[in-house]
Image (cartoon, rainbow, N blue to C red; front, side, top):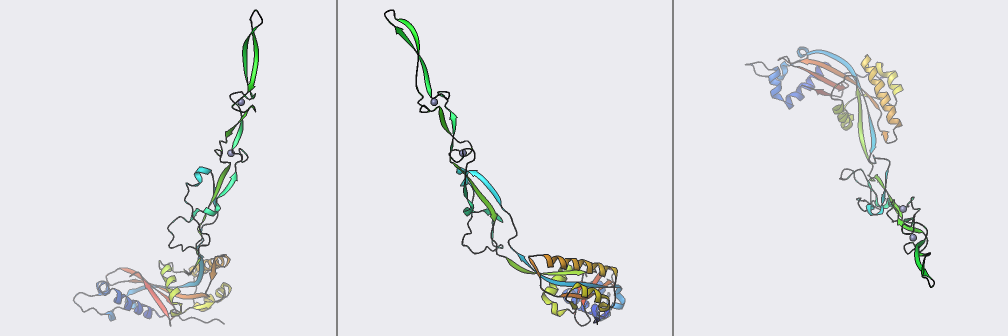
Length: 318
Ligand SMILES: [Zn+2]
Ligand SMILES: [Zn+2]
């Protein structure tokens, strides 16, 4: 069995709006509805005279808790030569409590001091130098000279080779040169740019879908979040139940309402799947009345009501 929800009476909606409008901007009310030379009275402003058309619509509401906080994921890595490691500004969160995102002034991802790691240079295999052929002895390890010798009584000139170990390579023929890759520092240094460990903040998010296509969806959602008990709707535990009881509950139906239910259902489903979200309320169905009005002066405006005849709230762009 479905419970039929009683929609508010048009006169009651109009009256509630009128009182609210007179409280917030009486001058505008006088300007738009007053008669020159006559004493202004709210009583003379009636729904019968100024409401030109009405539409019966519906709104669906549910509340969600969402975890906000460690938004950035993944990491970046940098590999640099030893003298460049210190050029970076490092951060450390070791042993610190989680960071309040609201108060954090820096980037969401920063270089972490604890992530610095030495990586043996691949070019020199961690030795810091590479063996190059000695330039002085051209890799022979020897310095070759030719002496001119004077032989015997005749002192005939004769050429004789003479060699001695190269002093630059100690006779090895090779000379260590600082590695071009690591600059002789044996290691390269790796560090990671990681997300700041923000505190996870759970916030309530109102979800509202209305078939009236108003610009007040955000406002209505926020209001419902604060005062759900002040507005009467019908609660459902799931969309299957809501869909089967939708028309008997409202007592009316239209294409926009079924579209709205479809959109709300898929939204609800995606929150069910979202690991960072939790649906914290039942699904509420509210009758919504949209009234198209014209003032005495001829200005057009709209009034919306949300809720049942017992408990409803109004919105207007007057
Ligand atoms: Zn040499
Ligand atoms: Zn190297």
